Length: 283
Image 1 (cartoon, rainbow, N blue to C red):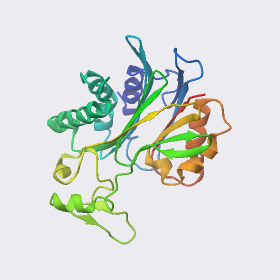
Image 2 (image 1 turned 90 degrees about the horizontal axis):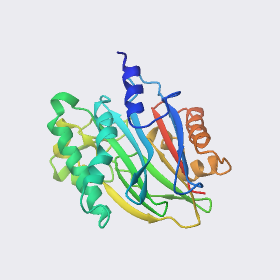
Image 3 (image 1 turned 90 degrees about the vertical axis):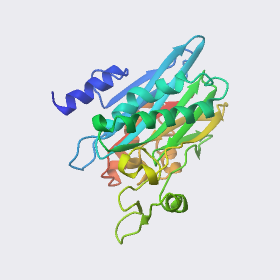
């Protein structure tokens, strides 16, 4: 079976559209105003597509959860594929999720990373960044991330970043204290041990001693001024600011069309990386 077919089946398994595995949409059953759409574009690199995502609603008792995530893999697609299938399950298994969601998400990230490292013989030595967003009953948003995939909220047309870009330059002291170093070669971005351009990631067994997998977590109350959420891999953010992304789609009502528009604009701006984007419309 070709890698493309395998990727298609993986996406079918988590509830993605069957007609086009790289684009899709869905809507809340609890609120007719909340919809989501996603779009992925393969970059110009010679390796297989390494971006994976989750975009779906899930009913648990009397609660509706919107589960949204971008997983940007590197050195292979096995780790982001594993995250797509397991990370949200691990988060929702945490007994304190409803009472202490921030702590629950941090524990689930740690448990998931440990599992990936234990399965390195099967999954390989690659890794992945992640940004996850859980929308609870359309009223509360829990965002977590490691790496440079990003979540941005539009409030009255103003962009608010809900994640933190984990870059080697901003965490070089922590990397140094773990025994690593940050390279700064001319013409290249700073890298951990001369290899990885982010300071936090899932997997990466050979670099793990010098990396962190602890996520930044924030909880945001969704009020009437919240318009939409953008989740995207760095293939978008390398060429577009938060406010530019918000401005690009502020007049587009359809969530999938919004996600597609953002990926198209990133390509127009000469992004060569894999680009994955989810837009959640809140109004």
